[in-house]
Figure 1 (cartoon, one colour):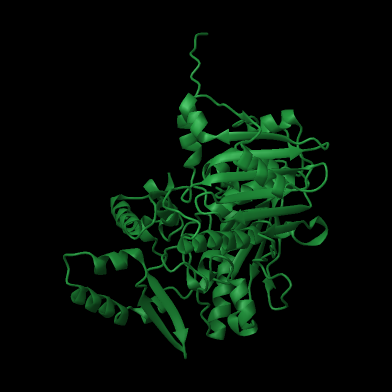
Figure 2 (cartoon, rainbow, N blue to C red; figure 1 turned 90 degrees about the vertical axis):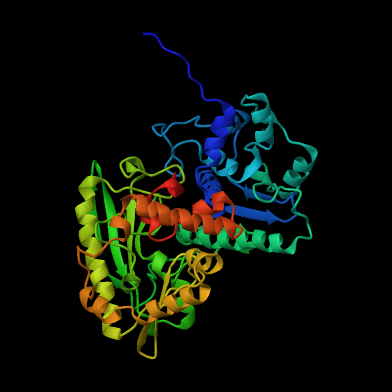
Length: 491
C-alpha cells in the first residue's frame, strides 16, 4: 500500500470550524452540554461587558478533568462518533467545544479541576495561524488568569470555559461607553437565556434538576407541549421500532387562545413565536436537538392554522447517526423507515390543530417572531381576517429604498396587493391539510435559480442594512422558505 499523509493545515481547519454557522445561543448550549455530561449541579453563564475586552464564560461544579483529560478535550476531534460514551454524555463528534468556541471568539481558555488541583490550557487562534501549528498554550495570560480566579467555582472540582476577543466586539471601534453595542451584547444574553430554557427544559425540572443561570438569573424551563394545562389534547404516544431500539413519538394539540390567559398565550409562543414553534421537537438523551420543524415532510410547511400542533420525538443516542444529527445539534434527517409513520402522526396532529382553530373561529397569531422573516402579516381582529405585507421585511425595505422604481408607485402596488389577496379562495382550497399544497420554490431541497436570486437580494439588503455577512447568512438560514432550501446561505 502506498499513501501520502495529508494532514489538514491548522489555519484552514480553524476557518472551517469557525464557519459552521453557530448562533451565539447555540454555541453556548454546546458548552452547557459538556457541563451536564460532567454531572454539574450548578451551571452559570456569565456575560461581562467591557467594550472590546468583553467576555463570556460558562462555569460549572461538575466532575472536572485531569490534565490529560483536559488536553484530550481541547484536541480537535480527539474522539470520533463511534467512541463509547457514558449515558450522560451529550456529545458525539468531539469537536463541539472547539467549533462552538472558535465560531464566537479568538481566544478559548479552559480551567478545570477534579482533585483540587487546577489545570489551564488556552487556544489562541492568532498563535495557531501565525505559526501554522496546533500550539495549545499552557496556562493563561495575566488578564485571563484574573477572570478565571474571579469566576471559578468553590471546591476542588469544576470547569470554567472562557471566551475572550469575541467576534464582532473585539475591535477598536467598540468602546466601553458604546451604549448601542452594549445593549446588543446583553440582548444576546436574553436570547441565550430563552434558548437554554427551551433546549435544556427537561434538565431544569424533576429529579434531574440542575441550577442553570445566565448572568445570575435562573433559566426557566419552557415546555412546548404545555403538558400541565388541562385543555391540551394528547394524541396516543407511539413506540416506533428502529434497529434494536425504538423511537417514542407523542403529538400534542395546544389550547386555542380563548382558553389561555394573555400571559399563558404569550409564554406558549416560545422564543421564536407561534409560527416557528409548530412541528416536531426532537430530543436526544433529554436534550432538545431540533425545535419546531416539519422535518421535510412532503406537503407540510408552516402555516398559521397549524400553530397548535407540536410533536415530541425521543431518539436513542445510539441511533443519532441514523438521524443525521449534525455537529451543531441543530438539524436531523429522519430514517427512511420512519418517515411514513412520522408523516401519518403529523397529519393527524395538523388536522386536529386546524379543527380547534376553525371551530373556535380563532387564528393564533405570531408573537415574539422576528419581523424580518415573514413577508405577509396575517391577523384576525373583530372577526375580520386581514393580510398585510410586512414593511420591515428587508426585501420590501430595499425596494422602497433603492433607486429605479418610483417609491410612490411601489407603495401603491403594495397596497393593491394587500387589498386583493384571495383570502376566501385560499380558505376554501386549504381548509384541510392536503398533499398537493403548493411549496414555495418547489419545496425542500436544492434551491433553483429563482430562489437563489431572491435569497441573494435579501442577503444584500441585510448586509446593506448593517448586518455582517455571517449574520446575514445566519438570518437567511432560518428565514422561511429558505430554511427548507439548500443554497449559499446553508453551506
